[in-house]
Each structure stands twice: as structure tokens, then as C-alpha cells.
Length: 300
Image (cartoon, rainbow, N blue to C red; front, top):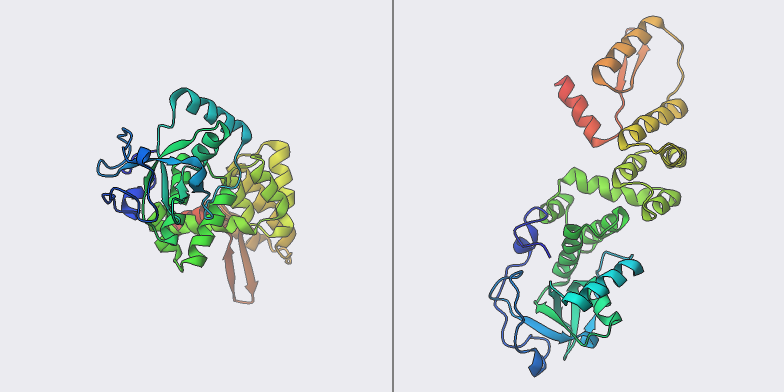
């Protein structure tokens, strides 16, 4: 596990203040064999690391990660056989001689698969919100989550614990616009979600597709898969589809058209001039928050 001063933004240390544990966790007595902590320089020196029975640890219902690769677990199990568990699990009390996982589910699953009886763990007292925050942040720091899992976890934190996007952003070291863009991924077509889960498209591709009408997402997805488009190429393909399908055709005026083209070159995006007698509108198109910021910078 990364140190508490590395990783995302303020990291685990700011979310959960370290506290010196008593000789036994509050929610259940620890067998005598566990009373002696194993050596570790990963956690705060005041935190005791217990050897807890694998069978007495239960899964975390807030675990954001849903996909546990069998191949990856086998590789981890082989490493544990050879070297043991280097990074202790984080658990919280769940009744007499029971503990609920907060972080380290892959290590726990791998340990069970090779028949380990006990695993090293740090016991902390956490609220339900903190349980979910720690599980999410640990996975983000290890880069184990796909974009859909991240988006689902963000949305759950916001909805269940009444957090604003700004508050969540501060907790995980992301900007509000980044949080908003990731959550939008949940609204893409099922075909796009399958491509994300299969690793065929990146988070950047998914964010571009999420900004398109659902009717156009499949067409652009096929362009990505067939042509191995980069994110920037995907943005251009999305613009072309939207312009072709959705921009209303108007009577051709060469002077207006020339001015539209001048504005498009200056701003780097689609511009439409709608004129009605001496008055009218200038419509500037953008397809991502980043593009909006660039247009704003150029104009202001």
C-alpha cells in the first residue's frame, strides 16, 4: 500500500486520523496468538498490526471493485506463498470475533485460496461513509478500478452520504469538473459500457462518448474500435457526427459562411451564425469541459 503521504490528493491520512489501538479491537476479542504485532513500516508506528483469522473476516459491502481477475488472484497467491502478505489489510469490527474488510480484498481472497489461517491487519473504528471512502481511495491509489467502477463509487458516495461534487473532489484529490465528467460515464449506452469493461476503450474515450447524444454513441464507438482512434481523434469524430446529424440546415449566405469559417479557425471549434434581419445569434459549439475552457481563454 502506498504511504499515507503519497497517492491521491490529501490521501488516507487526512481522511482517517491515526489513533493508537488498544490491546484488543473494540468489536471483538483477538485470540492470544494475535496479540503480538508483526513488523511493518507501512502504517503509523502507533498502530498495532494483528494476525486475524481469515475465516473471521467478511467482505466489504462498499467495495467499489467488482471485477477480480482469477489470473491476477493466482499470481498474487503465488507471491503470498513465497513472500507472505507485505501490506496488512485494513478492517473494522463487525461483532464478536468478526471483522469487516475495508481495504485489501485481493490479498484476503488470495490468502483464502491457498489456505492461510491468519492474515496481518490493522483494526480501525470507522463510520459507514469512511469505510466506503477508504475502500475507494485504496483502489484508486492502486489503479485497480475501471472507469465504471469509479463512477459508480463516486455516485454512491454523493447520493448515500449527501456529499457535493466539490466535497467529494476534496476527499479524493480531484476537481469538481473531473468528478462530474466521470459520473457522466454511467449514462452511456450499454455497448459503450461493455467496451469499457472489456478494456477496449479508455476513460478518456468514455468521457467523450458520454458527452454525445446516446443515438450517436454507437457510431462513434465503432469508429474508435475500427480505426484505433486516440481520444483527440474521438473528439473530432464526435463533432463530425453531431454536426452532420443535428445542426439545422439554413439558406446559404456566402458572407455569413465566410464569417463562420473565420470564427471557427480562431476558436478551433464549430461556430454557427443565425441571422434574422439585422439581429441574430452566434452559436459556439463545445464538446468537453476542456474545450470550453480553451474557448473561454481565447475569447477573454
